[in-house]
Image 1 (spheres, one colour):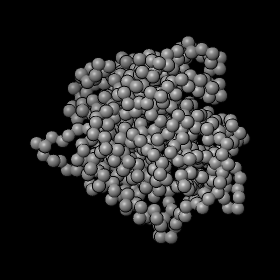
Image 2 (cartoon, helix red, strand yellow):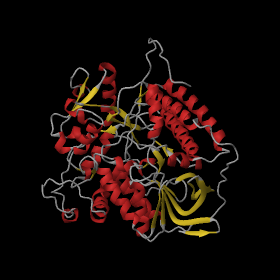
Image 3 (tube, one colour):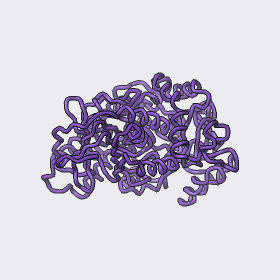
Amino acid sequence: MSATTDHETVDVLVVGSGIAGLAAALASAREGEEVVVATKATRPEGASSWWAQGGIAVSRDHPEQFKQDILAASDGTADPDAVDVLVENANEAVRDVLVETLDVNFDSREDDQRESSERASGDEDYDFTREAAHSEDRILHVDAATGKHIHVPFLHYLDDHDNVEIRDDTAALELIRHEGRVHGAMLESDGDAAPLYAGATVLATGGIGDLFTHSTNPTGSTGDGIAMAALAGADVADMEYVQFHPTVYVGGEQGADAASDASATGDGGDPFLVSEAVRGEGALLRNGAGERFMPDYHDDAELAPRDVVARAVAAEREATGTVVLDVSPLDFAAEFPGLVEKCEDRGVDYTEGIPVAPAEHFLCGGVAVDDRGRTSLDRLYAVGECARTGVHGANRLASTSLLEGLVWGLRAGSDAAGHAPTMIEAPELLERDPDLPEDFARQKFLRLRRVMDEYVGLERDPADLNRALGVLRRLKGEVDAYVRTRTARSLYELRNASVTALLVTRHAIENDESVGTHHVVEADPTEEPEPRADD
């Protein structure tokens, strides 16, 4: 990185520090580029990849079967060419980066686990597991905490790389763009904003969990990359496909207002995801009457696609008051010690079943990209959850998100190399009005979440979607009025969340077909209307 007058330049700017962003940084650095990774996260829990539990799927010796499983889980909507890229590169990407470079010690079937590098030539000793909608055991894992066992060594490796600088607690506020080309971004740290000009910019900003009261995403998942790209003119696609994970412990039962308020203050009962791998090992879902119900909803029962299981769990909670995950069919303490610790920390007696509910988990759509992560804007790339690669279609197959981030991150980072940064006039971020009211952003987020929870959740009624659109438009208008004269990270996050919420809602309105995670229902005209979200 270099400085010219008051402006910094770098070969490649990566925005975000999950597995996709780190893979992009690694690939660019391998090409000899100077790389800056700018991340809002404070390490390591601030990135979504750290929270990934189930594992990372690989093709093993059956890439075609892996492809068919992905297509089936997507309800036939995934792009077959994109899926080919994923399954054909899966084994090599995992071997190269995770095994040989980072030495991730995936669980082995043998008691005397050998070093990962000693097992890299074959996979027979790995403890492959299976999750929902997979037809074979193909998922590498480390207990039920695979994400952090990949993410932490990845960060440490790049920290020691001469060509990579990681800037924590640094937010991208705006892309620097001119005539269809992106030249870097305005970065904010400690309240100060300045341009960083880059030969190429890679967005890897993660998901949209902050748009909903309950989510498996880390705090700060406000759709930043999607919103910045959309505002710059980049194409977005499949935004209606928001996946809800069916088995999340969301804390004590609470009303909508209390839940939203707790979420906004960061105290939502300390939720945690109960990995799909637990059901893969035999755990059963039971309703408030103690009945196992998933066989009534799908032939694959607990291992049905996530969208099916999530709607079933929601329906049974509504009908019987609660749903628990019965872990008695397996040796839960021995197989998932990390989850046992989470239960014990929260006073949950897992021997009596773990109370679970659906929670927002993963956005299958995002910034539209090709097989190299290239967007419709020159020198702008997007990878990971903020990108729409076409791999997931309307519903994501379990344990493919880390793999997609790794494969597309490597491909984008390599392709992004070789461009010299060019300085142009940067956006003027104004700070000329008084500070925001103390509770402004929090109150607006509460309003946004109420609308998204009620109208744009697991099931969507066209009339409700149009009602949500009106509320969100007004909300964005209020936020825009402040953004024009104030520069504050919380305000830009709120703007990004409102833009992303509008995109999800608009795409949902435009798609009248129920498919995958997008489930359209018509309200019963004979029912008495209930009180609706505050608009």
